[in-house]
Length: 484
Image (cartoon, rainbow, N blue to C red; front, side):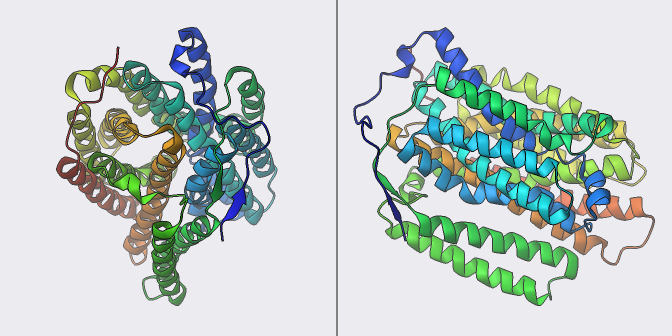
């Protein structure tokens, strides 16, 4: 059932002052606070990757269960993002962002103090809840504070770079903290950052008007439960094979729950996933892209981290710095994307980036146990950096173009929901491929790991190729609107 929500007394119903009438310096400060909040979320998506071997040893995770350290976070994050966007529309985006950041910091503290694997997984899931309140509010605040055209493209360029660079920085930062201190600091680092952002929000960011509405609790429940069942089923297959009864039960439950979710959203008066957002062809193609690309690429970080430490025998610090070329390539690329969008439009830039991602995954597909870092990993990492830098901002701009302010939260929440659910589902699929490929493989541990990872990279390449073909056929390629 949906739970009614009534705005508090004094809630503004008149449109706010156009944010783009503010001074550019003020907008710069607003953007800094917003992207710092999102950077924290982006960093945490990968900061524990390099620490996974230490976490496994310290808290006694099995190899297949270890992926739940990532999945517990991304599943709660992705499953509740739609509801998080709707909460921001109803109670105010700055208030929702503040609550999310504080919850994120608190759960990071709990995770850093964990002494059992169940404790850590619960803290990671709670982090995902905080991130689900944080992320859609950040993107919605950018959408409502910056007009379409150069200023929004610039803000989206910075924002998009924080998403991608945050994930890359997380790998480097995780290696540094794990080597110099402990894996626990990969979580504890969020506490001071979260407190600082929460303190800055009411000082620098103006609250948006609240809109009367209802929380689509039924949609949130069925959607989250359906995705949880699907990911759980894939994880069961990775360890016990396709004949596992619990895996089959999970797939059946996922099909029923997701079908129910679609039915609920089609009939709900105020759904958390308004199906009308898919009516625009370009936006529908963009949504398909943000679902498929992370599904093919997210698992690359997981397996490359394991290869660096367990095949190449890198320390956590060295493994983190192994991803630095990708980070630098991504950071350099996103600085030029706004100009490329203005000159060529979204579609050519997007397809170029996707083609590079397909090439990177196909290159990793050919990985052999004897390949070193310069010959086996450096080239794909550089292509991943440039490809991600060219892909995600055009997708964001395509999806958010023409969105009405009252639906900004829902549109941005759906964008990030599909992005993170794609990453979670993709990781579970690639872990399943890895488990199937290595279950009966013989050889040294490094040979088995490389063989399974290469198979997973191959499936990732096929998923990325699907994203490329869908974008080429569905998105029309209209140039982004430009205003003076």
